[in-house]
Length: 115
Image (cartoon, rainbow, N blue to C red):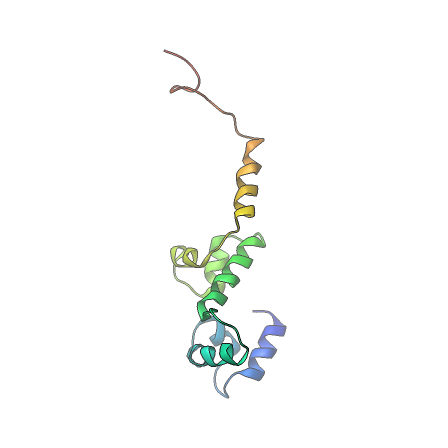
């Protein structure tokens, strides 16, 4: 968590706890109040876990690996973190296209040879 977020969360959180608790656990007070906050902001269909999905996706799109994203959200496995990843179709296309210049296409069953 960066310094700006830490300061903002300290100001917003209850009198007990640490800012990291809001990201890595102990977020019940945020989850409990999330529907009220969204209603007051006139936001429909935004769920608390959508924030986690955005957070994980932005970490991955910034070029960090899955293990870093896992640690940032406090998961014990990369598999759990993967549930929250939402890569854009453009990013997937870019990844696939990046391989086209280095891959050699082989036809046939035995690497392009016949027989």
